[in-house]
Length: 563
Figure 1 (tube, rainbow, N blue to C red):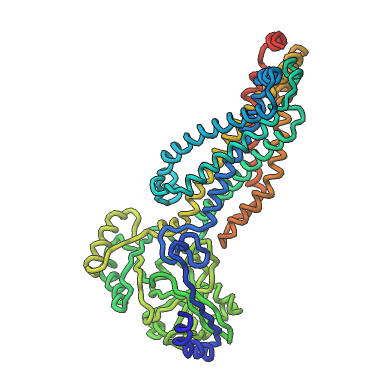
Figure 2: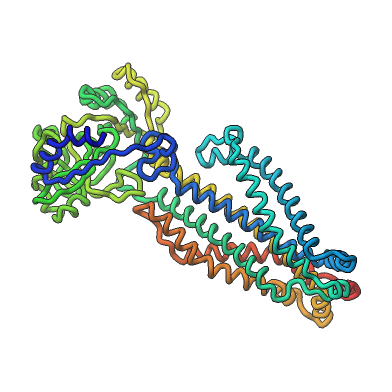
């Protein structure tokens, strides 16, 4: 294929290189059809609708792993916490002759059974919640066609690994208790257990990272929805027309049919899709976005001219010999805006050789805010076909106007399918994926915090249970409820503060990596991290306070009698 291509294009490429000064090197390559889903070179845009990228798969996988890790951390912490109540059982088993290996096997088996039950529940929840996920992700996944031997093997491996991760450390701790200490009630569970404390830090650190991500996504989406695009998007409707030579007459026919109607404010025409090209100015090649418009386009979109004039029927040469450029073009050419008027540009492709700049428009976002505003050249070149008609109408008569447009289209273009889109809907579609990820990450963040708080609640209960006598004595000596609340919550708040300090750099890095996909974006300032920190701290404080206040208000006589 490459040899055939080189043979048939050799002369053309050599001619372009000689005439235009462009070096062209084209290499053909093959790609398996199945690789189109997540390929970086020729991805879903080259033949799929609603495609995805590998980045999103990695993000989802990371979220899933984070949630599983947090769940395992909870299991470990709660299993160790529950060991206070099982210490006498372990002591008696050891006195009766149980070895440490037997106890480890027992606790690992318990961990496996818990994981197995959780796995069964997870399969049920996955089947129930899959339609919701499909709606969020824009997919059509089904467990029925995901059935596969490798997948089942992966599920079983996940079950075994989860059981080992969750059960290994508790089994070591519980099996290591000394019978004499536990039977006399002198076994300390928490103490300076740096591993358990480290797990709390890791757990909340992961949760804070995701909260930072969720806040950043929300701020960025809010920025995109409120950004000034440089033109008026309201009440604009796009109608697709057949891309052919005869379509050049359609804008005039539409204007003739609709211009007398009081609800129609403006009608304009533009080419369909996008067209990348290049021109030469002052010996310099400039790559441009080339669009064909009519003389009503700028006024319909309310795009301001900052120098020169618009296209006009009073100047017949405007059709082939005049162009309008944006500020980015002027900047790329190295001119000032006033000096650009009257300059000559030379085309590097097409039949026309040159044209004169008659106007300069203010930069406007003709694509999404994911892309920078590149040099744009507007022309009325008749060799370039129209593909869209844009209509601006009175918003108070929307239903009536849509019916009028449909009837007019069917009258003028009876053998072409009628379709229309509002400009606001077109803009929203540019950020469909981001809007879906905003929901997914928001739900994940809430789930993270919920799971983390369950684990925190268990550890607070353990701390209170171990300090029952101390709390009772403090109350007898006159300690206030607030003082006892501070005593119980202080260590946990310190751990969450450490988690926040660790999470901020990671959250900053990941957030900025995601924001790099946008040419126009928010700044990751202190506000994002402050909101994440305050939200996490308040949630943790509420969780801790539920049990701490209950313990602080308990009757000290009862707690001391129990001891």
